[in-house]
Image (cartoon, rainbow, N blue to C red; front, side):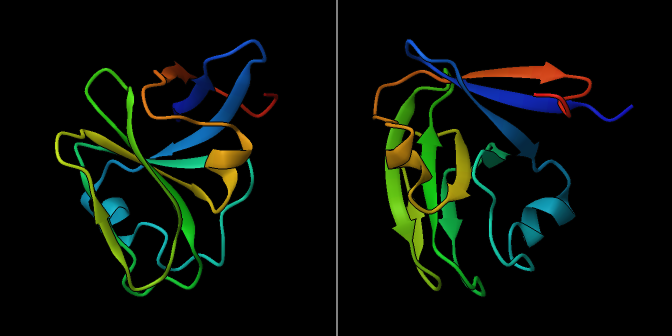
Length: 123
């Protein structure tokens, strides 16, 4: 059975995302290259990664860098196609719809929680 992940943001209101963890070499290399966009509430997670390139991309995205404890170290809102961004000391990268990080009020220093679940269709 395929395992999925949920990402929860801290705060009074429980905010969750459906997470696509990019694990294989092909998934990581392809990333979002052949997609036309990202849906609200969806996140692409690249573990063991501290940089993002937008070469070949067709739409801007928000990029959130995390350290080993899943604390936000840097947020890049609206990273445009054909750009590059990195964060020294970061361990993971989240890619999401442009504007999503500010709409969800993400801030540097927040600690995010990942939860592995078997089926998140009803979430």
